[in-house]
Length: 330
Ligand SMILES: [Zn+2]
Ligand SMILES: [Zn+2]
Image 1 (cartoon, rainbow, N blue to C red):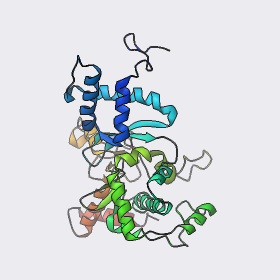
Image 2: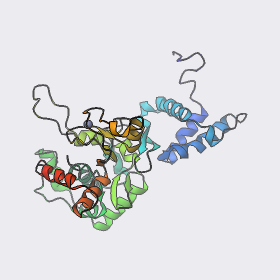
Image 3: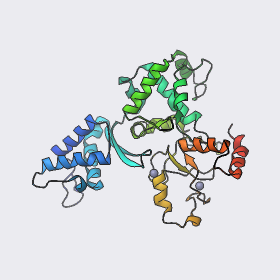
Image 4: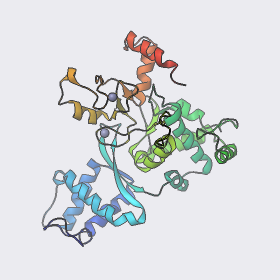
């Protein structure tokens, strides 16, 4: 086995009790923020090297990253991986989770939920990423009232968003709704297990754990595959976009003011990028449109819109702009 640097032992020899204890911590806590990991890692490393006691503050991001990498090298053959994502709801705190990497993450929910409950969760995801995620308004969240309405089984004549797929239509016909009380329980479980986030404005959106576990599922389900070379006219539909800064999915953040531009940012990633530029010189890195910083992704997109319709803060020009584009949403 090759060594990276002279002083670093090969990854395997490096896997010791400390790594096992770190993995153990993830088995009991499915999601941990970087601030929750620090004291745990300090304890583990102190127990492992009693001669060198560590305080929480001694644990650098680099120490966490190399610990995660060493554990991942060991567990990836078992289809597990420790992934990280920013918690978009709490100032983009880095959050980690132990994730099963096999493709259909929704199937894994079957240990906790019944088939009808999983069908309900899929309806919630459709509401977030299809119904509430248009070219004009990328809300990517669902209000609690709508979430409860979705407990009812879809009408038989409703086509699944996948189109005329006979299997999907057949499956949908067999789906039974769940009661509103059951829907309430499913939602509460999703929140307590770190899959959903419920905002103080009563919107449900995806929490870091869901973003980490459903990353592939979301893109496969809601994004068209890249267009073939021979039909350049038809732009593939992209509903899930990555951050221009960190390349993770954005469901809460900012978008370019040019509706045709696919640049999206997490708030903190945008701040990092634009801070070095003079306010009036800020341009989108891709289309060079003026960067206004007030075009939102997430529930703020919905709330800004509601404000403007009741004569709130949005300018008349912006409202006219919205109206003009109304007919562009099919
Ligand atoms: Zn980002
Ligand atoms: Zn742009």
